[in-house]
Image (cartoon, rainbow, N blue to C red; front, side, top):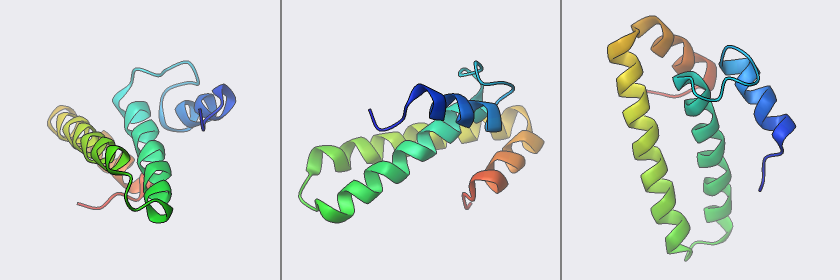
Length: 89
């Protein structure tokens, strides 16, 4: 896979509570954002890869649902993760 365990641990430590906290909404959103960026770079060179394009659309939808959940649950955590990751809305 494109991310090693150390890179994932660093990502979860930066956005979650600790590096083993892979279940928090912030950690999952950060991981999905990383995957979305990776697939987007792939699609820039492989324009006819429709399976990857479909998985990108599904992944963006999943991230949107998690962001909506976080916005309903705790607006301050939502604003913090959007600002950290540079997401717009």
